[in-house]
Length: 161
Image (cartoon, rainbow, N blue to C red):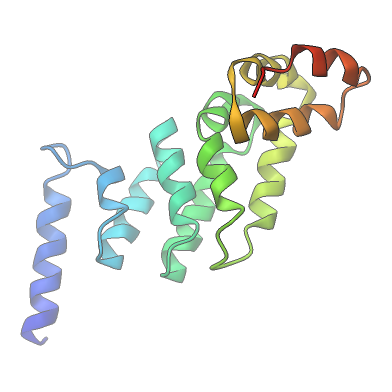
């Protein structure tokens, strides 16, 4: 191996060994070294937390295809009604993902939307909607409106923007 490759490898190993000592896997998902990001995304895919979800959403637009693929696989664990609190806490990054164009994020956004429209969690989504403002409130309003038999009642409860 050449000295540059050895140096990058040693740097990656050093960073990975520091996880838990002031360095988190979420931090490492933003590292300039794609190999470090790949390891971090792989580790976060094994956990379930709102912070991990936000990091995975951010990596869906990574410039390294392998990192994007791992992030997409990890995100699938969150696309269930039981993960509604995590999805709701990651609403802003999900909304921002729609504007990113490195790859087509349509299928991911459609899957997240379908989960958030699940009848099993409608009340939870509605309660969250009542606390939101701005783009998040608009997103949840549109989402709820698609399946609401009484749009006037939804409109009366909408937070003022």
